[in-house]
Image 1 (cartoon, rainbow, N blue to C red):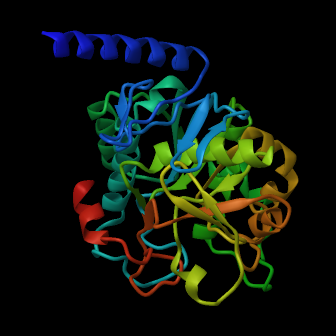
Image 2: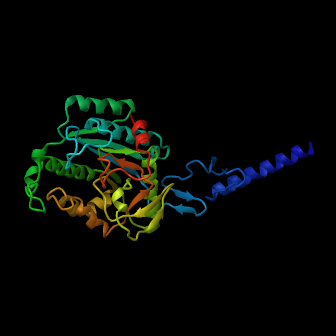
Image 3: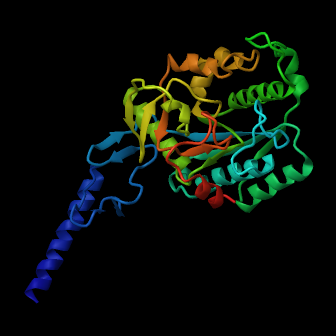
Length: 340
């Protein structure tokens, strides 16, 4: 009986200590069983608190001074064009609509798997160019299966083509496919003007891990708070990043390592603040086909921090030999199957 009383006394003292620690904003870690009683979680769970604190052991806590209020996901789709600038087949050699559907499904699965993102506003938009009604119906059915609302914008190329230079930076004729791509990017930038905070611009051939969006948003909060400035963030670890040895900087994100990069393709996450700040440079990507196409983005990355994850959070489903495609050291087949 005496030992039982002692245990009760210890338990009571522990509860009081936990309440006091929680009141003052401290976290307690029991390194014997990996419990965090102040959070009612274990170290194997997501222990960050969106908008408040980013916790990573053994480094401790980063106070979030740049909280995320909302996330707009703008998906650019075109189910009729297999490859924009190549005649090669994509990995798995399926019809383009299959990549579009798996890409959207992976985004929706990633949103649904995150308890953190339920605390902020989420808006989804699809900007589509020239897809058949049957494919648009498949996209609509997919959103409904996840109980997610979205806005569909049917791109009108005629609103933009007069503002697109008919010859590119290499003095070549700009193809109709590239013109529609540039118009779609322009429309997505216009939509971003109405966003409240973060915008994720994403093409319809990127398949995401379940933890991708959670990691991206929490990492944005953590690193933006640390450097006191908004950032650009790319979810993909591209193979071209390993084609040459160059110096970089390594950052600790929510659950991944991230590195500074100087180049990305046109799938990236940033804030409305950054879109407004670099509007003219971003819009130039929609008016002249640069060489490389994404050069305006690369110019921005000389002024602002852009990071990408190691390992990748999303794979770009291009040809298996493309240096702009499949991320290294990732089980591509499993990611493909998990989003089928």
